[in-house]
Image 1 (cartoon, rainbow, N blue to C red):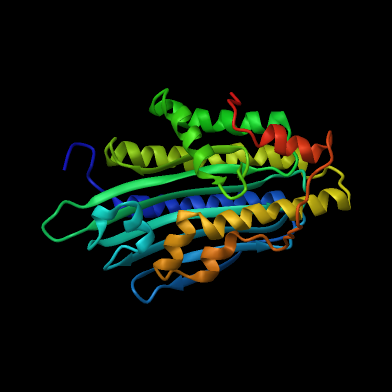
Image 2 (cartoon, one colour):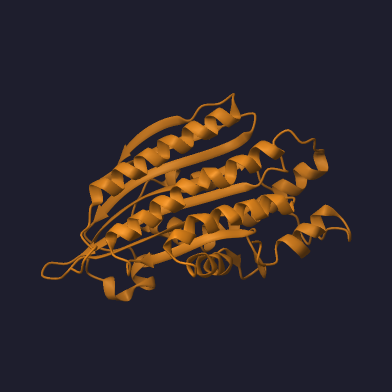
Length: 305
């Protein structure tokens, strides 16, 4: 194994649990009325996790921050389809995944995930990689929010190379895309997967940089929008657009598919679902409205920084 590649999974696990705790503390403080309920769970095939869910708060209608550590004798189909050379290997996977669904339609939904995988086979070197990122899904766009989000993402990437942010920003735009709708899920951020060419130490450092940047990116956006006035019109648009979030997570998201196929805890895997959502046939915003601006301006990938 080359220099810098020695795996330290206990250190990763310790960091992830600390990240879960710190984000929950920050989101609870912002909400001010609701606390995260905590539930530990075990997986019969090996591993388990800690699910933390906030519900019916003043700021967040629902939020979930989940830590999981699962292991098994065979890689799930979603993983071997993506990496067929891993068939027949045992695996260990750990990560933190979170989704925050705000009550106020002017506060965007946010998602973040950082994770580490190891695939092993007797007589062979272990194959490991890390992945993750964060992305933002506004219902009403505001330039300063999107610029701040992407600037924070860029700041997290810059110590690791000037090409890192543009590459992972582009990957995010391409990954969080609904092909059946022909539109992105939101305004993007960062997404990376299968990262191991830097060696373990630097790759773990990048995981920490991305994980720690989430709150720096999201908290100011929440604070500047959470008290804005809104009407039933904005609320109904928010519920309608949440449908796109559900469609992506259930049809395309690799993490959701991996969790369900690896017999993870279903309640924890589906904690990303919003509490209320609506679909309407053929809904098209009126020209010149803020709803049309979301679709025609903000949901078009562009360079924000």
